[in-house]
Length: 314
Image (cartoon, rainbow, N blue to C red; front, side, top):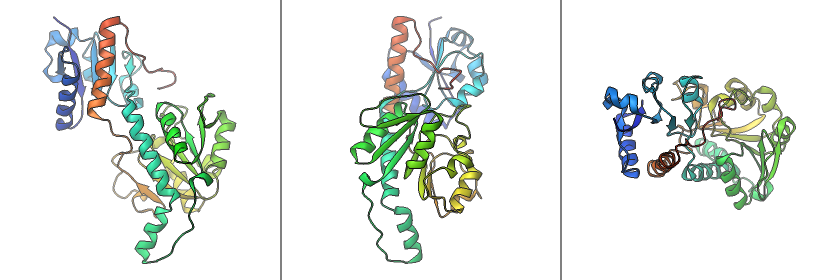
């Protein structure tokens, strides 16, 4: 039985069909088959699974997988659901995803820099008042996370004239960016930044990282943008920081529960902008090209692409 590439998804049927079409076009030499259409022999032969929110039981039903290619950049849910005995998992590293995220970081940083939340409130109140302009060069943007996404975001912010202060757990150097690391570095970013942007992966070490104590350490009147994962920020503590006036605004694209449930205090909070997880959507065509390149390299060398470090979670 010849090898096949299994497509294992638990997503909207139209979205699944779109992914199937894009992937098939990107790798015409491969036989790509949806999990439910695999014969028993094909399940046994499959060495690669391309997945999007898969049912863990479906992945487990492919006993000879050499590796699993995720269609998402974030893989914490996938890693947790597949468990310790799962094949190596490869996350999506797509330059287009980084570009899109950097675009969103810059757009919403501008939104805060130009006082758009205050002007929106003035419109609701029918108040005509011009606010003082703040130059980008007079504002510090703190980036939490200097991986593939954070690196490109830092570059775009710097090009726009913002002072950029980047933090990572271990020391990292970026051209034109002041970088810090470790616990002392985190305190420096929080205390000096006018806007803090979170782009960290969700791991055991980052879950609850931005808790009450760390939010209280932020510069008075600073704003927060969370484009990473909801559980990195302790929701109750964030609401307290906003209610108490310590923070001026929060732009939130990610939450502990998604979709954000009706009745959540975030929906109507005057200092919160709610986004429906749209900061960096996966691009079908570029993602398919990345996946196809990974599979071609594996066919050529027999070595899976770089996989997620289970200990670190990314």
